Image 1 (cartoon, rainbow, N blue to C red):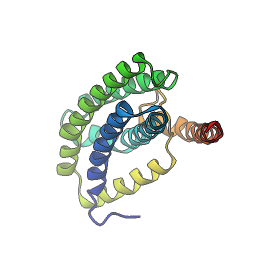
Image 2 (tube, helix red, strand yellow; image 1 turned 120 degrees about the horizontal axis):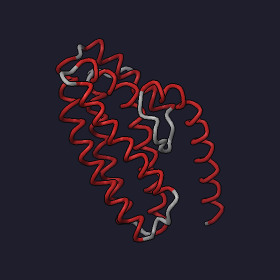
Image 3 (spheres, one colour; image 1 turned 90 degrees about the vertical axis):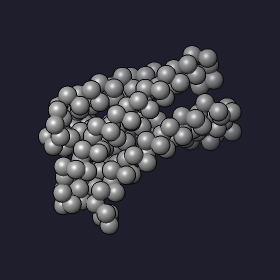
Image 4 (tube, one colour; image 1 turned 180 degrees about the vertical axis):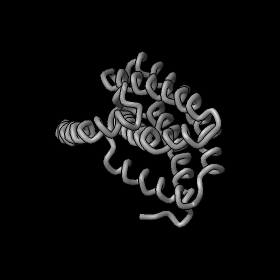
Length: 188
């Protein structure tokens, strides 16, 4: 599917930032059953969103914008830390005080990260890429999001690491997600 406005993929990524923050709010405000569902949705959206950025957006930003290397390395460091924290959260009791403290810390870090990304990368990309490049990037983002891992994989932040490890990780993640969903349905 091709976007009518080739820059729409940037708008979609920014919209996903807002959706991610809403999911954080939902996790923090949820009862037992809904918290689990909200956390799974949050984890999946974060993983898919970051894979698309790491494979498509960051490499282009590195090459196309002034100080792109520095900007992208700072974002990748933030993503690495967020993935590590998200992976820790996966193994916690979702209703413990420790979980709530860590999810609030992760929310604050993700919000800062999203603001920087939008200001330092998205705006610059709109100014630096032409319509044809934007259309190709939009198609690539959609393709990546359809096959990306659904769980955090700390240490897999570069485009090459994502392309090497991502398909295998995505297959395992989706299998784990299906098994977990069956277990949750059986528990109710």
